[in-house]
Length: 124
Image (cartoon, rainbow, N blue to C red; front, side, top):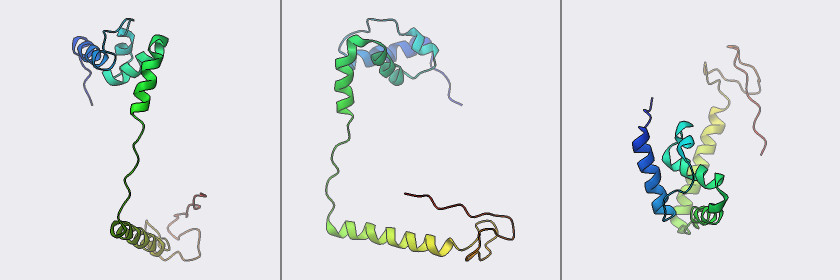
């Protein structure tokens, strides 16, 4: 179980985040965020959402967090990954005919003798 930060430590951490990200101290009340049990990082995001004055700053932070493009892989690495995926799928197909609880062959059956029922495959 995680232990909750003391109010003073939480307040210092929250103000530090505000000064780093907003480049100013918080203008509005924020103690209620501590009482909700939020971490300073989550409280900062909630603080930005609650106060419309910081709407522009919030947009900037969200744009910074957008994932960058994944660099292209070379053909050898791509072939290696595809081979791994293929082997994994083949293994799953071989194992899918056996009951995961008692290892009986369930080829063509929906219910095993031990009572295990096959789940319907997920539709993609």
